[in-house]
Length: 423
Image (cartoon, rainbow, N blue to C red; front, top):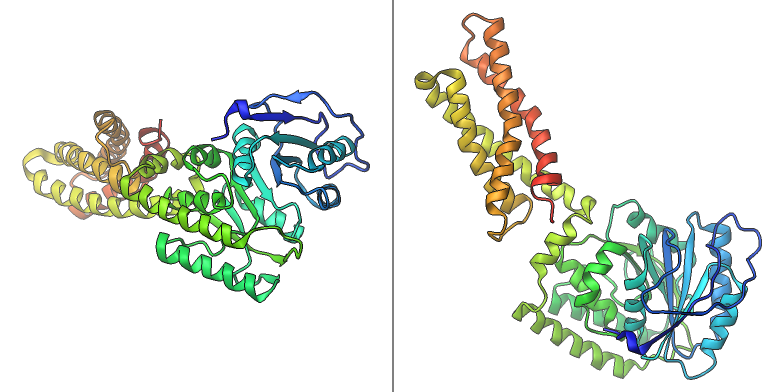
């Protein structure tokens, strides 16, 4: 983690980048921004980590700023995150920020792209956090497809990929082989399902970032991979966008040193998962409420399966008990027995709660939820008895099935939003 005593942040007070702006607002460089403060939240916060990039910085930031003004439909903020530059990068970044509206600068005394992203993302209040390389190797036309699924709630993380069908990549054979080999290694060792870990074009929902970042230890180039692996382990939905990408011939990345660091990172993550140092189950539970879209289809499927079994068991038990207890008595006893079993099954299988914590509360609330089912089923039986003097058993069972189906919808909503919602 980047210690607050190691961070010196400089903020440029400026207006948001709006797509409706005609000319950029001219402002002066403001006072030093203390760590932890952040400008006004806008839908998308783009971070550009830089280290000794005075040659490319000004032109690329101006190009990005112009694109956001003319072609991007959401308000954005740009943060240039300078991490321990020793050339004129910081002064140039401040000058560019003073020229363009919606741009601020953060300076960190510690080198590392991961450290810079962690510092800025942790303090941001924007719903969607983006980072891109300063050289803009990725075509900016991919920015909207990258952030739209996150703003809509469809996905939690989005990555640009150079290795999926539809991507158009211009780079040398050496880098192509290294990139593909690295991702094959990740698939084999860490079981990753995303295609491209290292493309410098990614976005994440703020809630997911704030939960995952405390568990990401790397502060350099392996930061991307570690964040994505943790996101996958936590059950987050990762959206991939094939991009047009042109290799920067002036890239100063040390491939050998980076490869060694990546191998050490993979080995460390193996140890992390084997020892349980990262609380993956707890992350899944906490992130469940922040990722409704990615959980919903799976939860619906499992809830429906549990519901089918419960309905069959309820009807069988009702039929057995009816001669001795009558319709209403059999309905109450069968429903109570199935309610306890249904809550236990949904607790573990549908909503992924595997600990004994809150067990009594869950079952108590589950019984209250099944009160809805009792009211509907008892009401349906009463309606059948009122309409028919001696209703056939098939009519009673049909009324119970219909009432149970109606009650099922209400139970799912209440269980998801009340009973099993992570506290």
